[in-house]
Image (cartoon, rainbow, N blue to C red; front, side):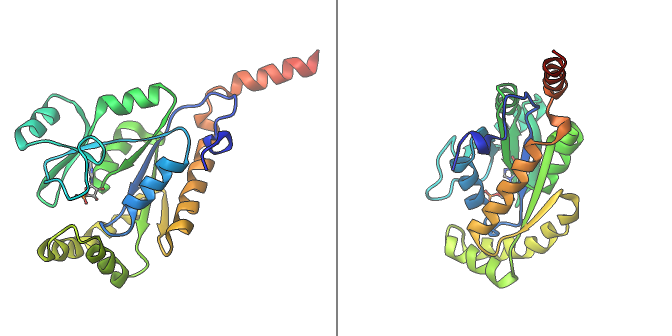
Length: 220
Ligand code: 5GP
C-alpha cells in the first residue's frame, strides 16, 4: 500500500526517475501499471497521445488523449512530444510538458510505451530512465489474454500475436525482465525494482549535504 516507506523518499532529496514498462500487448502491462499507480506513492502515469480509435471502456485523458493524424504530426513537429513512434499503423507519443512538470514537482513518472519510445527516452534522459520488460509465461497465455480482453477484432488479435515475437526481440535492451506468471507476484517484483532504484546513490542529490550534516553533528 502507498505510504512513506513505499515512497523511497526519506528526508534526502533525489532526482525523479522515469520508470518504463514495455511488453508485447496482452502480457498484462496495463493491469500492472494500474496497480502501481494505485498502490505506490509519488508515482504519476504519463498519459500518451494516440491516433488510434478509443476502445470500449477507455476514457479521454485517462487512458490516452485521442487525437487525429494532423494534430499528432503538429505536436511531433513542434517538439511537444518527448518521444513518439508508429505502432500498429497508429501514432503514439508522450507529451513533454506533463512529464517535465511531474519530475520538477518531485514525482516519478511511469511510462507504458514500446521499445522505440524507450530507446528515445534513454537517449534523452540516460540514467534517469529505468526500464522493465514484461514477458508472458507462454504464447498460449498471451493469446488467451488478448481474447479475454475482447476489445479487438480477430484480425487485430492475429496482427498483435505476430507482432509479439518481434517486440519481444528487444528484451535485452531493458534493465529488468519480469515474467508475468501471476499478477500479484509480478507486481511485487516491479515494486521491488522501483524501491531499490529510488535508493540508488547517484539519484540522491541531497546525500552530500546529509552526510556533511551528520559529520558536523558527530564532531560537536
Ligand atoms: P495499445 O494500442 O494496446 O494501447 O498500445 C499499443 C502499444 O503502444 C503498446 O505497446 C504501448 O506500450 C505502446 N504505446 C502507448 N503509448 C505510447 C507512447 O506514447 N509512445 C510509444 N513509443 N509507445 C506507446
